[in-house]
Amino acid sequence: MADRKYWLFKSEPNAYSYADLQKDGVAEWDGVRNYQARNLLRDDIKEGDGILFYHSNAAPMAVVGTAIVVRSGYPDSTAWDPKSAHPDSKSSPDEPRWYMVDIKADQEFKEPVTLEAIKVLPGLEKMMVGQRGARLSVQPVSSEEWNIVTKLGLG
Image (cartoon, rainbow, N blue to C red; front, top):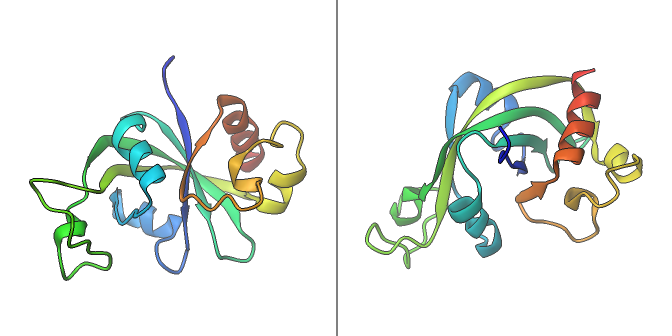
Protein backbone atom coordinates (compact mmCIF):
# COMPACT_ATOMS: atom_id res chain seq x y z
CA MET A 1 0.00 0.00 0.00
CA ALA A 2 1.63 3.23 -1.20
CA ASP A 3 0.39 5.49 1.59
CA ARG A 4 1.01 2.98 4.38
CA LYS A 5 2.71 4.48 7.41
CA TYR A 6 4.74 2.78 10.10
CA TRP A 7 4.81 3.21 13.85
CA LEU A 8 6.45 1.90 16.98
CA PHE A 9 4.13 1.22 19.92
CA LYS A 10 5.72 0.75 23.34
CA SER A 11 4.27 -1.48 26.01
CA GLU A 12 5.65 -2.87 29.23
CA PRO A 13 5.34 -6.65 28.85
CA ASN A 14 4.12 -7.06 32.43
CA ALA A 15 1.23 -4.69 31.58
CA TYR A 16 0.48 -5.88 28.02
CA SER A 17 2.82 -8.09 26.03
CA TYR A 18 2.99 -9.21 22.43
CA ALA A 19 1.85 -12.64 23.64
CA ASP A 20 -1.23 -10.93 25.15
CA LEU A 21 -1.95 -9.32 21.78
CA GLN A 22 -1.60 -12.68 20.02
CA LYS A 23 -3.98 -14.28 22.54
CA ASP A 24 -6.52 -11.43 22.27
CA GLY A 25 -6.58 -11.38 18.47
CA VAL A 26 -7.59 -7.71 18.18
CA ALA A 27 -6.91 -5.20 20.95
CA GLU A 28 -7.86 -1.62 21.67
CA TRP A 29 -4.68 0.44 22.07
CA ASP A 30 -6.14 2.53 24.87
CA GLY A 31 -4.86 4.50 27.83
CA VAL A 32 -2.48 6.81 25.96
CA ARG A 33 -2.43 10.04 27.96
CA ASN A 34 0.11 12.16 26.11
CA TYR A 35 -1.13 14.86 23.72
CA GLN A 36 1.52 14.30 21.05
CA ALA A 37 0.81 10.55 20.98
CA ARG A 38 -2.95 11.27 21.10
CA ASN A 39 -2.66 13.47 18.02
CA LEU A 40 -0.94 10.64 16.14
CA LEU A 41 -3.65 8.16 17.20
CA ARG A 42 -6.43 10.60 16.29
CA ASP A 43 -5.08 12.10 13.06
CA ASP A 44 -2.30 10.04 11.49
CA ILE A 45 -2.46 6.34 12.34
CA LYS A 46 -4.80 4.61 9.89
CA GLU A 47 -6.20 1.17 9.18
CA GLY A 48 -3.57 -0.93 7.41
CA ASP A 49 -0.57 0.85 8.93
CA GLY A 50 2.27 -1.28 10.28
CA ILE A 51 3.39 -1.34 13.91
CA LEU A 52 6.66 -2.40 15.49
CA PHE A 53 5.63 -3.79 18.89
CA TYR A 54 8.26 -2.75 21.43
CA HIS A 55 8.67 -4.17 24.92
CA SER A 56 9.79 -1.31 27.20
CA ASN A 57 10.97 -1.60 30.79
CA ALA A 58 12.07 -5.16 30.03
CA ALA A 59 15.32 -7.09 29.84
CA PRO A 60 16.16 -6.59 27.09
CA MET A 61 14.08 -3.72 25.76
CA ALA A 62 13.35 -4.74 22.18
CA VAL A 63 11.03 -4.82 19.19
CA VAL A 64 9.49 -8.29 19.46
CA GLY A 65 7.09 -8.40 16.52
CA THR A 66 4.81 -6.55 14.15
CA ALA A 67 1.15 -5.68 14.28
CA ILE A 68 -1.38 -4.07 11.95
CA VAL A 69 -3.85 -1.27 12.63
CA VAL A 70 -7.32 -2.69 12.00
CA ARG A 71 -9.33 0.38 13.08
CA SER A 72 -8.29 4.01 12.74
CA GLY A 73 -8.47 6.46 15.65
CA TYR A 74 -11.66 6.83 17.67
CA PRO A 75 -12.47 8.20 21.16
CA ASP A 76 -10.90 6.26 24.05
CA SER A 77 -13.88 5.31 26.20
CA THR A 78 -11.63 4.26 29.09
CA ALA A 79 -11.04 7.98 29.72
CA TRP A 80 -14.61 8.55 30.93
CA ASP A 81 -14.86 5.23 32.75
CA PRO A 82 -14.04 5.95 36.40
CA LYS A 83 -13.35 2.23 36.95
CA SER A 84 -10.72 2.04 34.19
CA ALA A 85 -6.99 2.01 34.90
CA HIS A 86 -6.61 5.48 33.35
CA PRO A 87 -9.70 7.69 33.75
CA ASP A 88 -9.73 11.40 32.90
CA SER A 89 -12.61 13.37 34.41
CA LYS A 90 -12.18 16.09 31.75
CA SER A 91 -12.97 13.64 28.93
CA SER A 92 -16.53 12.64 27.99
CA PRO A 93 -18.39 10.96 25.13
CA ASP A 94 -19.53 14.42 23.96
CA GLU A 95 -16.05 15.95 24.23
CA PRO A 96 -13.47 13.17 24.03
CA ARG A 97 -9.95 14.17 24.99
CA TRP A 98 -8.16 10.88 24.22
CA TYR A 99 -8.14 8.49 21.27
CA MET A 100 -7.22 4.88 20.56
CA VAL A 101 -6.83 2.51 17.62
CA ASP A 102 -7.42 -1.22 17.30
CA ILE A 103 -4.50 -3.46 16.38
CA LYS A 104 -3.87 -7.15 15.72
CA ALA A 105 -0.67 -9.18 15.91
CA ASP A 106 1.04 -9.89 12.60
CA GLN A 107 4.46 -11.54 12.85
CA GLU A 108 6.40 -12.48 15.97
CA PHE A 109 10.13 -11.93 15.56
CA LYS A 110 12.44 -14.95 15.61
CA GLU A 111 15.07 -12.64 17.09
CA PRO A 112 14.02 -9.55 19.07
CA VAL A 113 15.69 -6.36 17.85
CA THR A 114 17.12 -4.81 21.00
CA LEU A 115 17.38 -1.14 21.85
CA GLU A 116 21.17 -1.57 22.00
CA ALA A 117 21.17 -2.89 18.42
CA ILE A 118 18.88 -0.09 17.23
CA LYS A 119 21.30 2.50 18.65
CA VAL A 120 24.27 1.19 16.61
CA LEU A 121 22.82 -0.26 13.40
CA PRO A 122 23.38 1.71 10.18
CA GLY A 123 20.11 3.20 8.95
CA LEU A 124 18.57 3.36 12.43
CA GLU A 125 20.58 6.32 13.78
CA LYS A 126 17.57 8.64 13.64
CA MET A 127 15.00 6.16 14.94
CA MET A 128 13.14 7.96 17.73
CA VAL A 129 13.22 5.04 20.19
CA GLY A 130 17.04 5.18 20.18
CA GLN A 131 17.24 8.89 20.96
CA ARG A 132 18.02 10.14 24.46
CA GLY A 133 14.87 11.33 26.22
CA ALA A 134 12.47 9.98 23.57
CA ARG A 135 9.78 8.57 25.83
CA LEU A 136 6.75 8.84 23.54
CA SER A 137 4.75 5.59 23.64
CA VAL A 138 3.61 5.95 20.02
CA GLN A 139 6.30 6.98 17.54
CA PRO A 140 6.58 7.36 13.78
CA VAL A 141 8.96 4.97 11.98
CA SER A 142 10.25 5.51 8.45
CA SER A 143 9.73 2.82 5.80
CA GLU A 144 13.52 2.33 5.72
CA GLU A 145 13.64 1.80 9.50
CA TRP A 146 10.66 -0.58 9.24
CA ASN A 147 12.43 -2.61 6.55
CA ILE A 148 15.69 -2.86 8.50
CA VAL A 149 14.04 -3.83 11.80
CA THR A 150 11.64 -6.37 10.30
CA LYS A 151 14.36 -7.98 8.20
CA LEU A 152 16.53 -8.42 11.30
CA GLY A 153 13.68 -9.65 13.48
CA LEU A 154 12.21 -12.11 11.01
CA GLY A 155 15.63 -13.47 10.03
